[in-house]
Amino acid sequence: MGQTYWSSAVIKIFNHYFHKRTLLQISFDLCFLSVLVLVSLIFNVSQAAQLTTHVVLMSEFVVFGILIINNVLGFYKRAHHWTLKQIRLRGVISLCLSLALAYLIFKISAIRVEDESAFHLAMLASVAIIVAHRIYAFHALNKGVLRQRVLVYGSGERAQCVGRILVNKDSSVDLVGYYVSLKETETQIPDRDVLSADKTLTEHVLEQRVDEILVAINERRGGSMPLHELLDCKLRGVKVVDIATHFEKKFGQLRQDAVSAGGLIFGDGFEQGKMRTFVKRLFDIVISAFLIILAMPVMLITCLLIKLESNGPFFYIQERVGLNGKLFNVFKFRSMKTDAEKDGTPVWAKINDVRVTRVGEFIRKLRIDELPQLVCVLKGTMSLVGPRPERQYFVEKLIRELAFYEVRQSVKPGVTGWAQVRYHYGASIEDAAKKLEYDLYYVKNNSLFLDLLVLFETVGVVIAGKGAH
Image (cartoon, rainbow, N blue to C red; front, side, top):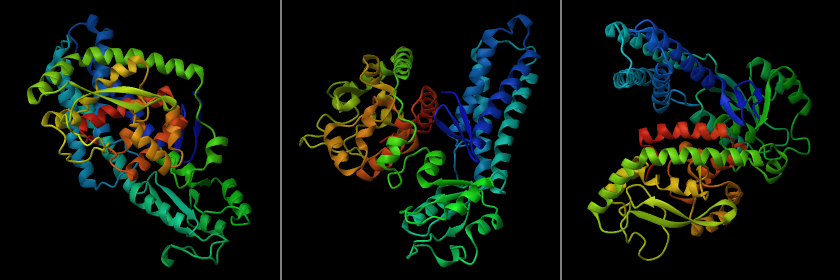
């Protein structure tokens, strides 16, 4: 379970793919901040006896708070297209928020320092170094350090689509060009981007210093691929991957135009063992009970606000499809008018939905309306992390429209999920198709580690107010 796999760009830890750059950034921030905060405390606390577990705990609160701030600001994103000016601006925002957080945590704690000015200076220096390192990392990326040179094998519609996504979504990639497949008769790629047929694939790879060959052709049989040349490139240290593997590793999704039933059946993943089920259930009970107690004041205030704005129940109870297609009732705070679906026809929520109340708009933005679902987690009909539970009307429709949609029902639905933190709120079949790609990735690679990562990113999504309709 804990085995680690290394490749040219990603590391697989507990079934989840990390970019090496992202993992190194988080590890550096975590270790460097922890050491600097503790050292600054050691030299500034009034009594050595105060250096207790409490001090360490407060220090780690600061560290993880700063990591969350950096995550919300996008410093750990897999891909970005920011200008250097935007990076520096985010660095300044990170510095201000991080210092404010550190100051607040240590003020409300019982820790007392002998020289507050020296302590504040040490904190300022610690956070400033981290932010400077983040900005430097993005500068280095834009200058070509740690970038990956990719050659697309193929020139048809699939290659065109893949190339467009690489250029628009992955700033860490330099697309060197397209090599026409042996069996392709029509090309969708402009001539200027097609590599010359006068040279072999291996010659282009060596000449262009290619790190990865991305195979993007519809048909692989019948001599459509130069197997000897691809093997030669692989033996020279060049990665050779298909588009399904590439997008799973790079973007955490199983693209529908690349996935197949055979790949899902004979590939790795989709492990739902008894131990995994037991650990996930235990985790759900402990964390959901803690969150209910922690959020109780917010939930009581929400009930009051809903009642003051309009007549009707506090809660919205609706039947949803759960594990293995079994129906269950989901509980949410009512955020819409009581006659939101007076004609009886289910309708997807959308941006600026007129059915949403003023209180409803506020609690949706902060995801407060989702808190009652923690009761469903305690009952066992939901999990903290999993695919979003949908209504039977939409599920039946989406199963007809989207291949493999029923696969997401092999795990419990979640209060939050990989698709929820990776993609905005879905309001159409097209959105459902994109979210399904992330749901399939979660079902294939689900683990407690991935659940913890989703919960960490959910904090950032809530703070930033992203994706709520």
